[in-house]
Amino acid sequence: MPDSPSRSLRLGIAGPVGVGKSSLIATLCRALGDELALGVITNDIYTDEDARFLRSAGVLAPERIRAVETGACPHTAIRDDVTANLLAVEDLEQDFAPLDLVLIESGGDNLTATFSPALVDAQLFVLDVAGGGDVARKGGPGIARADLLIVNKTDLAPHVGVDVSAMVADARTARAGAPVIALSRHDPHSVAQLRAWVLALVDRHRSGDHTPIDPGPMAPHSHAHDDDHDHDAHHEHPHDADDHHDHG
Image (cartoon, rainbow, N blue to C red; front, side, top):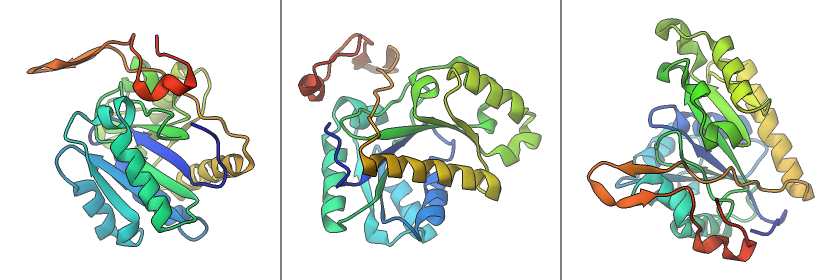
């Protein structure tokens, strides 16, 4: 995917079911809406529920929030065949040009989901404290190599017996020191950290100083009752052909 500061920065947001991806997008829209022109693409298998949630929250004009119904496991539409999402992003950019930032929410998957660099310029991976304090240690390409890891819902930590400092320390170890933000939408300081990180990324994109990095393929996995839907870590994607690389 060629770098092009003339188009929007496309930022993917992935993570397991229930970690607060849609609420995180709402928080970003509120924090950035006064200074950036925004658009949102959501992904669900058979519904537009996340898009409807964001529209009802009033964080953006409803027509700036588009839904993709993937009809398949969530990572397929953000990694294996990004066509539907790419068309949705391009339509949004054409309808509301110029956009500064398009947020693309993955459908909820597991710890293996990553976005293709053919779709996004950078990606966040989201965990939450309610999923357990040990989750960050379990690794995976999203946790280890996304541009930013969010440890979300820190305000819930006292209620679920999680030590946020220890969880963040584990996350930083898993990421070899790459950025981690402990976030609560009720904590202005953490929201300001996230806002500053995104604004700095937008600036690097505009100046041509940001290069999308592929966090790597998902780990081998399968889906129950779906013998035809297996992914091996050693495979190539058609959309990668022009980039002359594979995911071994």
